[in-house]
Image 1 (spheres, rainbow, N blue to C red):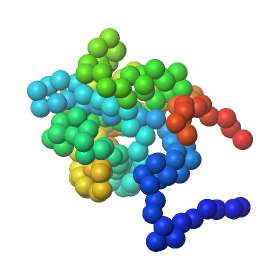
Image 2 (tube, one colour; image 1 turned 30 degrees about the horizontal axis):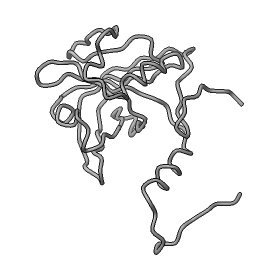
Image 3 (cartoon, rainbow, N blue to C red; image 1 turned 180 degrees about the vertical axis):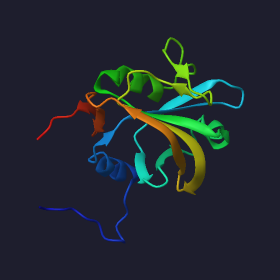
Length: 169
């Protein structure tokens, strides 16, 4: 297998790095919470991963310039929704610059008031545990208080700037 690499002295552009990262297929999630004013907030995120089984911890990251950064830094609870293949339009809506992403979207609040979206492949309801500023993002670690999944829901995938569905080998 041929691999292309760059020496430490070769400059790498942000676009080169982004293109190379685009070769890593990810799932697509929407992270939701409530702002300090009680408004539902949410955005599409593909930087999601498990951290620990005991205790159950997950992580996701958010750009430091994101409009919702202050709200996510202050919220004690949030939910991470793993989108199903038929939720592409929802992923695009929550990735857009729309001010009112929840307008016309069906959701219910959990016990902590966090908006939960129906029809997802999985949902992780989290208590904010820690934050780590790194580069131009902040890594959020949450302790999973409750999770659920629907075993027969195919996940929505993202690769090379496009959405995909799974194809078992």
